Image 1 (cartoon, rainbow, N blue to C red):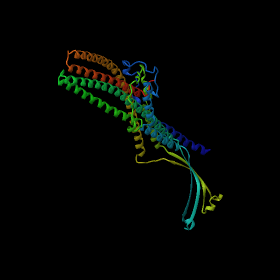
Image 2 (cartoon, helix red, strand yellow; image 1 turned 30 degrees about the vertical axis):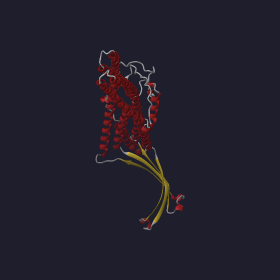
Image 3 (tube, helix red, strand yellow; image 1 turned 180 degrees about the horizontal axis):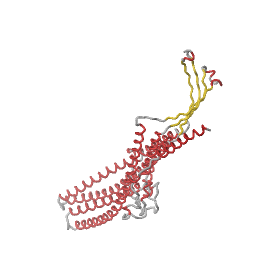
Image 4 (tube, one colour; image 1 turned 120 degrees about the vertical axis):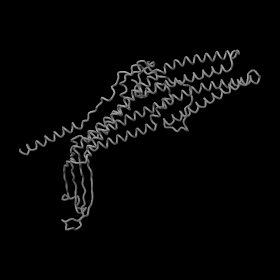
Length: 468
């Protein structure tokens, strides 16, 4: 009875230690530095792009590129999702993180092993006569996780794996957006090439006619030189567009995991649909951005590791058990008289370590501060990305309207100049100026249209791959 009462204070002390350990390993986060989520995006209220998407439905995460209704784009994005090197690296890192998580969690389970050996030695009990001892047996060890050290490490490793999974989604989304933007740039370039080449053909026809008239003495050599200059300048522009198209085609090849030497995209008419992001998309959709999810789980893992570092101040308890046989001869090894077993418990509490444990806690806290700052930065960047694309789409819509008026006016000016030139009222220089202005305005209109496509893809990426 006295022993029972005398052990009560010891159990009380143990319970108090467990309670303190549980409190000590919880590390609160100061989220006041993380910006609050506004109810709506600033640029969306005045966005000229506020309408319904081309598909007529909200687009969720998944095959977001299908809203562009381009079969070639669909094929390229799906191939990139499977074969892109960056995606494959991210997938391998996810597998590695999951393996590390399983490896860390395995430390919480009992460890069982088998062993066998033979030794020959001398000792005083045998009169220093050499003796051989053959042994075989099993051992079991188990660390009692009273203070949550192993559980915390396992939780942190699992959060690391979750972060890698989010990074894989983020990498896949970035690659998909890169493929879409590069492909759409190529299609826009094809349309611009067609415009420049048709203008070049018109200039060449004008040059042939002017040379005939020069040989007949109807025009001066200056007129021929001017048309030749326009032909050469337009040829240079066409070659520059060809060079840029080749670069974009090669970039698509790398993104989808193909060899650039054997990959090509046939020029076709640019008929890709332009989806429009609807009004009223809540800013809360940003929480599903995979890069933000990755930063958040990384923050949680760092928080868990602070708790793991704090458990170094508490004792560790290990239970062990062994059982087997030991005999001087192999033939006697498995006799009942050769049996041996043992059980034990080990409590370890470092007293002085030169500040190692304190440094470990400080290092874990620093990692937590870094993770919190990275998370805050990721949130700020996410809002900036969305606002950038929303403002771009709003301004590009206005710019497209203004550019359309410019194209209409320059086309009318070219028509009038051509009529006046044929009737002899103006010089050829005025006609060439009008044609040059029309070509410039048409090319700028195509470039504005291409920018609208690229900003739409950018906005879908900034929203995490959809807006449902």
